[in-house]
Image (cartoon, rainbow, N blue to C red; front, top):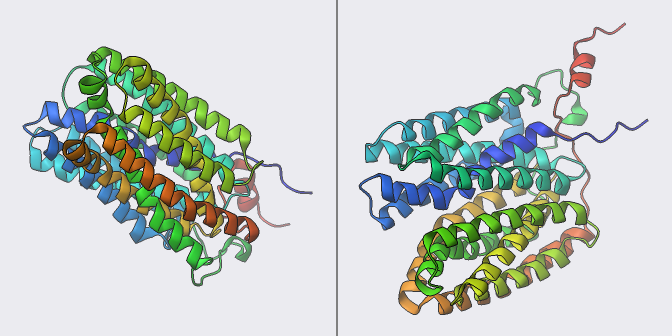
Length: 399
């Protein structure tokens, strides 16, 4: 009799804690700019350093999570996140804030690596990914609406990320730790990365895809204020509605599931994102600006969920999921700077056109990878998340 499908809530929680820092990056960078003696460029550089630390952790741990043990690695990452972000929140010394952000970023990347590895081993990685995106979208949206009411300064967003990591800590007790007595069926076979060509192509495309998203996100506030001629409060209201639309997008991705495969949502979704970026970047009034931002925030998490699921499908041990996620972090880190440079040199509409054209180009290889993965299914290798039932079986002596 097959076991009923259960939701791996520890992995969902780790996904939420790991992705919260990138989701809050615009708020964090803005607070660094206003709360510390940093220019906008310097504050952006701190945010990029945070994301580079996260990417570095992913590259370092891509094939080591299961060998070291998910529980130990997760606790290490959460500890670094609490100490790094918490320490940065408690000081106004710029070097200490920078060091804390980098340490916290490494912790976020470590936690994300554990989540990605575990999600790749699930029988339905897309479902788990969707739940994780729903969690981080809801939490980030709530924080974006709450933080402005907590007073000025850089401490609030950093403290929120640290407290989230602390809250997730108790759930790590349900992650499996490798032991000598662990069943061999639970151990993933060692070897070279499967589907090497498809994985490398996806890992090469993801930085470009993420860069385009965060290039727009990094300058969206300026577009609303300078080109669409909106007030700061109106821009904030648009962003709040857009974050709510993101929740609907994630929910829609969960409902859609694998019904149409991965190639169609990734290819068509990326093309729609390109259109949304063009609309937002060329907006000259409230209607076009709101339409572009809300539509983009609706479609973006849908495509992201399929891309994470695609990376997970390439290797049941989760190595491609971690590597592709880390490559994505590189693009995320470079996005705001790229958007600022393009806007300064060519204006917002041309920036949008360049980003949209780039997305349409990389949509082709990403869709091809999705088609290849769909034709070459991989066996599932379970990396267990312990539940009360499994714990009882492991601690009950044999008759």
